[in-house]
Amino acid sequence: MNEHLFTPRNRGFLFLDSHPAGCARSVADMWEACPAPSGPSAAAATEGEGPAALVIGSSAGYGLAATLAGLKRAGIRGIGVSFEKAPTVRRTATAGWYRTAATADLARAAGRDLVLLNGDAFSDAMKDQVADLIERRFGGRLDHLVYSVAAPRRTDPVTGTTYASVLKPIGLPNRTKTLVFDEEGVPEVREVETGPAEGDDVEQTVAVMGGSDWERWIDHLAGRGLLAEGFATAALSYIGSPLTAAIYRQGTIGAAKAHLEATARTLNERLGRTVGGRAVTSVNGAAVTQSSTAIPGIALYTGLLRGVLGTGLVPPIRQLATLWDQLTGAAPLALDDEGRVRLDTWELTEEVQAAVAERWESATTDTIAALADLDWFRTEVRRLYGFSVPGVDYAAPVATDVPWPVPTPRAADDDSGPEAVRSTV
Image (cartoon, rainbow, N blue to C red; front, side, top):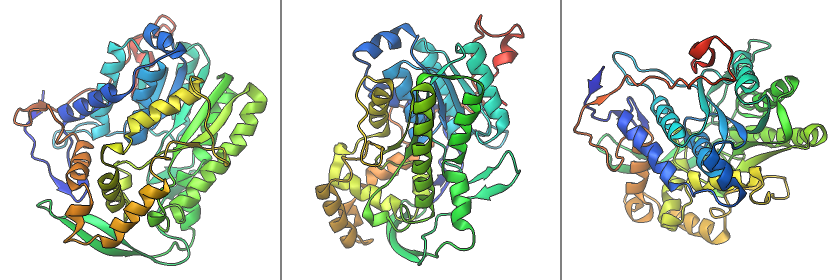
């Protein structure tokens, strides 16, 4: 068993390795922070016979929060899909690999039947594998699907064309403030300019981050007759502040989000007609994630938002607990005029946005420490990779070759034994 001592190595917000024990502890902390179930869902959660659910993008960010909140709050059983890299002789596994192993341990301890698959969610092979599992392991009916995929590229399984997403404004260049840290962790506020989308940049980004794959998943499962009566699905999204709108909501990503919302309306009409179901987008609030730190201006905005709200900033696990309440009927669906679930209202009030905008205008390298919660932001970035997690002994060596979790065979599976439900592809 390979054991190592770790000194975090990073390039900006990207860390080169992840800490297995820190990743596991961060998952346990999220589990503890999730509100316990109440009302009718409490019994199902306790008995381990909750609704059958599929979470696509289950190992990081809001997808991880959806998985953990679903397990604890709604008592789901089912399948999580992610795409993570295994440990090698020279490198650790990706942080999501270790978080997935920890999620499996928590699910097992709580009596939840959870199968975790590692592979390309965009592929038809993965869709077939999931459908087969639903048929033989989860009674042939799926109650919920949460779609939370953030990927830089996607290969269309029909045409074989590979599309790549870009982070660009549409129409004109965008110049914005952004937050960076040097190798010593000293903060700097810079201005960066991003050139506008060119050629087919918008179409490529929509092909990767829009609703095409979400719809393909629904089509695939419906074609196999696997959607339960009342089936509900949600794709996770973000709108954000006017301060970041040019690069986000009005940029190439925004075009993809608009496509996602249009897809939700199409799916909602179809599911309502065929299985009495629903499809919505869930607009979540700001958080520090591996995806969000790559977007110019988002790091600065999130740090300032925390400076304004402090502990009033609602973490993803609590937001997703609210979403599960709405998806399962424990609470009414609270939709805006566009048919979207809004979990970001705490962030976008006039008072909060005015306070953040005032700090944004004043933000310079000299003033940023007084305006943003930099200690919190740095810690949140490091926690994404398992570092700076309270309660972890970073002076002790830790095993890095953690195996991908393989579920316990069930009587409902076929006769080919554990290999029939092996969770890697």
